[in-house]
Image (cartoon, rainbow, N blue to C red; front, side, top):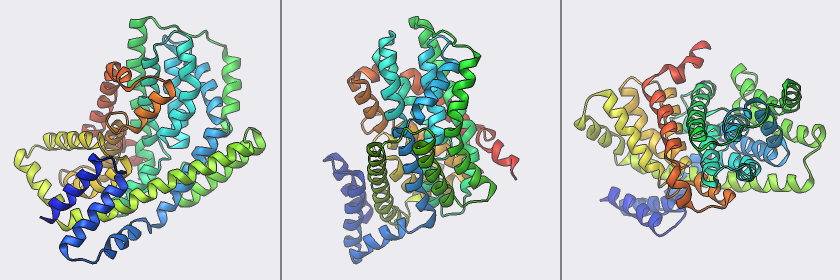
Length: 426
């Protein structure tokens, strides 16, 4: 009965439109009350969920991303991407995808990617004759590269949800190849559509412009080198790397590029505080919710249910992916990482899957959920940036869904996709 109260209260909160974090918190409080525990436990578990040192890296990652969003880094990356791939058929679509891969690898935020690159590229694509829905779909689906390509604060959340026994450095390395692979799959889909619809190619600007663009964008790339390289080398902890990365991004945009105004700094600080608060509230109440799921033995019961359907590891992994895809359509990513990791990670490990591989599979899967209704944050932001209705985007987005699914299946069933790079450092 307690589990029914927990899930029923949460479902009711989501249906009436309450924020997911508060729906989880209220559901946890109701279940604790039913079981006879003091309601204070709800907040004790929530506090324990965010009292983890490695979570301090999240506000630094977010602030660094905001600084790059408002400090002109995105424009330089777009210029470099345009010089490199703009001459291909559907060149601006390729520029969009390649820019997302570059910017996502620095900011680690899908929403920041859409806000920065979408506001730059979607209007230009529309002016050059691209359909608005195509421009928005390319921007939305390529933005989730920032979730997988390091540095990504979602990887830190996964490491915490997994009990702290997973190396963030290994997760960073594991995300590189799947992120690039996903962007390549999206580029193939965009190219096929561009050929079919006869979208234009941009003229090649020459290798001189390519070199100038690379030199101009290189200092921005060094932010990712500081964060990822500092963590991988062991010079810094993840939190220290995030702090030094944020300081470097601030100094770079303020004194080297001289593109960070006081207004942009204020917007960066405000955006970082708002996003960090949202993420931390989600982590806090999701911790209480996940504690009750463990108390009611949901992971063990679900494992028994999946094994009752099939004992074939391939089938079980497929079922896990389907469940995650469905949950990703209705819940926020950070909350799902905290809730689903304790449930599905033991099952995956029982099937012989490496925890790092499962983490990348989880992130790619839930990243797709950010592009799907009814709670697809990236999809809604992309439609707002492109000024089109949600229905217009959904009618033509399916080739990009298929491209991401191809990458997801490779991550799920080909371990080397995510484990090859980490194995080089073993």
